[in-house]
Length: 52
Image (cartoon, rainbow, N blue to C red; front, side, top):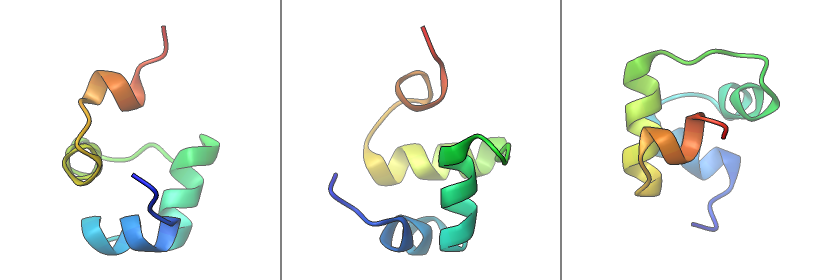
């Protein structure tokens, strides 16, 4: 969606650092945060968080 980490963080109510740590695999977000990220990006949990 062409969002920066900071923009996504603002949309879901966390810090940019939290988004960076999630992307790097160094932080396991809560289910509520996962759902918020999915809603912000118009994606499903499967699309964002499960590897094939």
